[in-house]
Length: 186
Ligand SMILES: [Zn+2]
Ligand SMILES: [Zn+2]
Image (cartoon, rainbow, N blue to C red; front, side, top):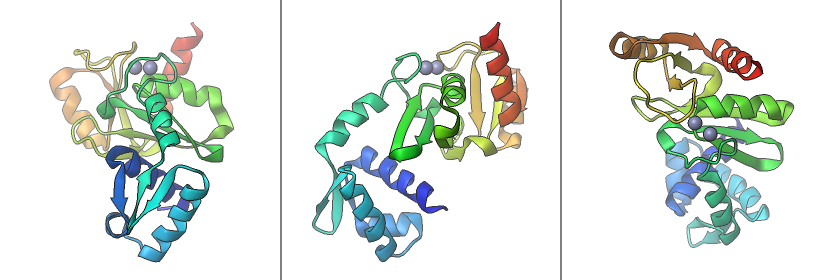
């Protein structure tokens, strides 16, 4: 895991739990407590967290940020974690979209500002790098909010299992993004 990915992951964890111990972060991210301390220092400097005894808490200003992170930056719909598409941007900014559909559009708009895109596997809810994920379009059931619907899966195998039950077509990251892009230009 790259330092930038680790920082993003720490942010995600703090946003979710509000208070976290250094020891927990060290264990979960599989790095030394010293590394976590260094990461934390950066987040303190940014004003994202405040230090507590043995850990960190989400800073007040970050609560406001979190409010922003709960609505899609494209269509303003509320975000459900299971379908969310998260963009890690330059200058330590994060934007979230309600689903891969909006996420792809926003990513296209932001271009080089996007350092990393992450989404969640529909079955397991695990975080997956968008580039590594597989996407299903044209499924027979409507699960997410936006049309055309784009569903994310951690592996090709899961995506193929899904279409056996619910129809649709499995696409790679690039194929799925091109498709949404084309759709938007019509
Ligand atoms: Zn949206
Ligand atoms: Zn959506």
